[in-house]
Every structure is written in C-alpha cells, then in structure tokens.
Image 1 (cartoon, one colour):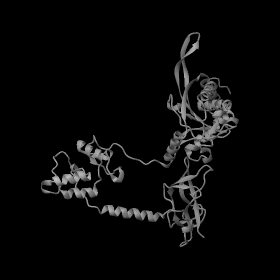
Image 2 (cartoon, rainbow, N blue to C red):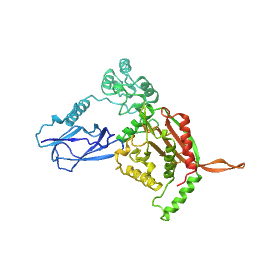
Image 3 (cartoon, one colour):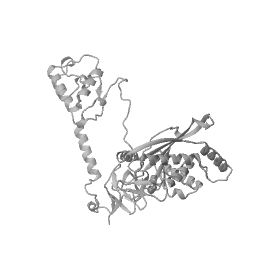
Image 4 (tube, rainbow, N blue to C red):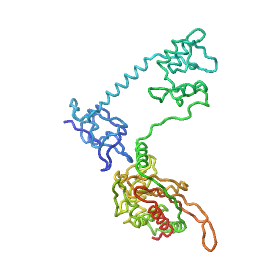
Length: 438
C-alpha cells in the first residue's frame, strides 16, 4: 500500500521548510534508510530518510519550494498504485511543469532572427517609414543591420526586430542613443521591456561589471526576519562605553589559570560580558521580556541568545537558564552552541526567536566601534558589544590618561521600554563590566 513522505517538523516553532536537493527521482527503487532529499529550516539543514520500501511513485515539490511541515512531499509504493489521494491541494506533477517549460522554449526558438550591427560608429541609413516604425515600437534602430540597398534599414528590418528584440523605455532609448549601448541578454522591465540598466556595450567602459546571484534560502529567511523586526517594532539604540581595565585584568588572570590547569575553560572577554549582562538582567527584569503587542512575557529565568556568524548566515542560538550556570558552565555552553551552529547540527528549538529572552551580539573582534543591532523579535532588546579602544579619561586629582574603553550599543523596542528604563539598564551593564567579580 502506498505511503506518503511527509515534510518533518523540526521543532514546535518551525512552520515551513525549504526543499534543498532530491537524491532520488521519480521511479527510483528506495529502501528503508535511503536518503530521499535534504531540506532547510531558517537556520539549519537536514536530510530525510525513507521510512518505507518501494518505488518513488511521485514527487510533489521541487528543489527550492517552501513546504509546510507535515505536508506530503512524495509517495512511496508499488508500481501502478494511485497517488492522487496524497497530492497536496493545487500542486502539479513535476513532469507536467517541465513539459510546459519545454514547449515555451520551443516557441521562442522558432521566432525570426534579426541582424545586429557590429559597430555603431558609422552613420545609420534608415528609410523615413522604417524610422517612424522603430520610434513607435520602441526599437533602437542604431543596433540594426539593414537589409536594403547599401545596408539601408527598411521597414521589414524593424518589423523583424520588433518580434525578437525587447522594447526599450524612453530613458533606455535616450541612453542607448547617447552612449551607443545595446540591450543585454536579459531585460528586467514589465512585459520584457528593456530598462536603462539593461543596456551594455562591447566597450569596456560601459560593459557589465556585475553578476546577479540568487539569494540562498537561508539568506532569504534572515532577510525576511530582519525586515519584519524593523517593520513591527519601534527600535532605538543607546550607546555607552565601559572602562575595560577590570574585565581585561580578569580575563588575563583566568587565561593563566586555564594554562595552569586550574580551570577547565578558556574564559573569553565575551564570556565575561555575558556574565555581566545576566547579572544586569536580574536587576532589570523588564529587559528580560518578550513584547507581544498588547501584553508582555516577563521571564523568571534568563535564556541568553548569542549571535553567531557562520558560513551559512547569522544564527542566534539560546543558552537556556543561563543565570543558573557558573562562569565555567556558561563559557562551555556558549562555546558549544557556537560550534554546533558552524557545524550545522544545532537543535532547531534553540534557534527559535522565542527560545531566548535577550541577545548579545559581539562585533568587538572585527574592530567595530559602534553599531545598531537589530532586535530578534519578540525579544525586547539586544546588546551590541564593540571593540575596546583607548580613550582619554579623568583619573582623579586633575590627572588624565588613556584608558581601554569597551563600546556598548543597546537597541530596545520603545513600545516595551521607555528611554529612561533602557538607559538605566545599559548603565547597569556598564557598571557590572567595570566592577566584575567571580
């Protein structure tokens, strides 16, 4: 009996997944455990194994399709078994879509061709009737090779060009005439019209100096989330600097302890900043919240999110109950989730925006002195940690000196926090960093 292949659910917060690559095609014999296809959530990728043995009777979705979880994506069964009862509503067989595409390609191939001039330096010979036709149809006759006496462009040449060449907008025609440009291989205007940006030339000065690449599925999802964050919240960023002498001295001592075998973890500056943030969140719980529009979630525990840069894109995993961990335990957890993100085997539940209550994004290693991090909704705020730079400071008794200062950038949702609350919370982080003890 035929059985459907479902799109797995990777975590309760995951609603759709994107098909990556099919390793089996329709009609292939499959065994239990064979890899059928790969798929992606917004942060991680997986492979789906066959749960039944038989023939892959039908595939309902192709590579790149976004599929709801628990939806039928294929059917496995015996040869000749019906599959229509398993077909998701409205989807077409893969072969039917491909056939339609081929037919269109054949029709395009049968269109007449038009001769294009190799050079635009010589004067264009064109009959008045042909010129009027070209202007009416939006055809750049400067590109045409005439078939009339002496290479003169006649009406027939314009008619043929109108069937094969893209129609140019007024701006494109003007630019093509002024700069002696041609329409490129692809056009981007409505109905195939050529825009000014579609023009190209054999001249290196005007040649195309870019290529268009489609976004990866991960980048599309990240872009969607970042855009939604800025569209659906009132984000404001405050900047402040913290004296980093204490935290740098503590880091130096802990590094020596690690090298001497006194501690099991090589504690980093980021680990220490995260510890300071957790302590500040316990004093200002209004920042350890989710804003839900007409209500807020106030969390009793700190679930700390950490922005991790990976080859596949930005990921923000969460360390659950971070306020219960020792410094060594916190360091171990932060190191583990960062490594899992880069390896691609992080638990999707930890990547859900609702998994964390507050996020830290550290760009200090990149030399960034100030930036505006974007909130990971529905969280209320995010802290950007910047590089440490020497700045002049009053050391007392009229003495000034250069002190290492760490930049801190707090972005918060003004719908959830007032400016005064956010400033006090940021100042608390600063004081925790400047007076950190373990």
